[in-house]
Image (cartoon, rainbow, N blue to C red; front, top):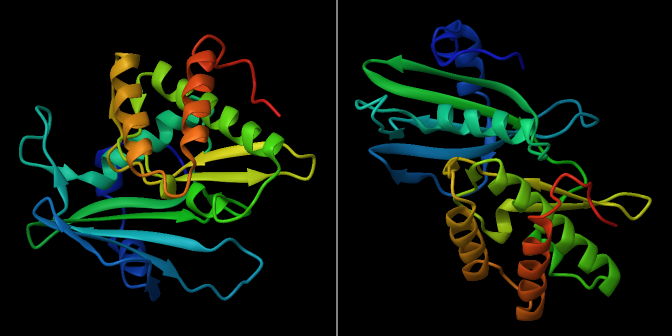
Length: 234
């Protein structure tokens, strides 16, 4: 997807918007009723099984407000900014297929269509199976490096739950980390503030992660703050 301004996204032809808006799919979870509107995610049906699955986030009147947008803007547009920023930091996120927003009968509607993270499992799923200690520690070190890059880059995930952190093991035993659900991501210029928020959230929503692994992650994180661009560890 090309880099478009928010104004350009809002002005895209409604025919393409309508196609994605009405595409059939299966709800991933119940829609959120908050922020004055509704936000939900569906898994889209696809005729070509060789292509990645697509997920479509659809929002109606689901807004955030700021000094720049006191009347409100779709949270999807803020999430798009986070996707782009994370990519610049070398952090893996789902590929964006389509993103746009429009006003319909005076109400904002917004769409974000992304590809599924093929070969990845959530951190929740990771801990549902047994892994060799060396591989598990490599995963934790790489997760620590990813979070250190994020925080040193001036960003906070904002919803750092085990279900939003994804892990992939490559054939050579390399570990890759990806981040998902960036709707609450925000700028944080103080690394300590971002770390306190994100690591604190993860500790409260870590699923079956053992306490010893959380301690190891925190230690690896503090080490990674000194060399976040030195490459992922194996």
